[in-house]
Image (cartoon, rainbow, N blue to C red):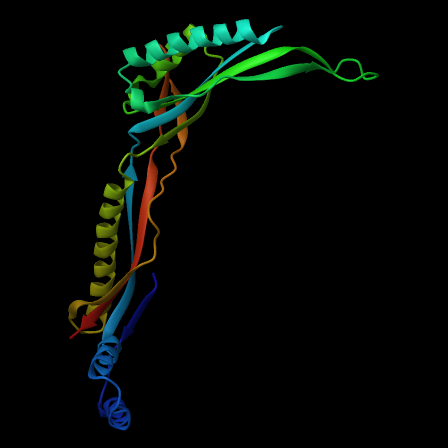
Length: 242
């Protein structure tokens, strides 16, 4: 706990201060008032933490087919894509939350003969579909159905909170309460009373929570469950003392 506590005591402190104010008459009155307030103040830090559960899940479905020629491979990828889009629609995933990328084709090389240049042994045709789920509880069902339609892989699964600012606002309030509690303890120990807030500053950045991906096995099926993320706010508060 970092804190700062000061109070003027006796004439030996007040007299030099008064002399300085007379000699520095050109200094604006609000500056001297602010300085006096800071001299009779308690400065404390405060920390607040809230715990957010993600309500949005993003992932990428990858469809890949390999063969001798590109054209029939593209047809196969397009067929799987149509089935996947139908599956996602049945899962009540909005079209705006689905992004299907153009097909990509690349040659596959055979490096088995070290004495000659690699030869093309076929082609791989791939399409990626990015999906955002507003109801992560249905993820396992969508996962199973997507794999059944011919999806080759699921990549980049990430949980996030749709409105992290709400949790950060709660953390800020907790940080203020924490700072006030510390200041009250210090004021009581110094036989003074706590006054209004003179200055408050925020030391934490905007919330960008990252969530731990956790997997739990149930008795009947595999269930993917998001972890929780700590959203923390840190502030410094200066209280006037009386």
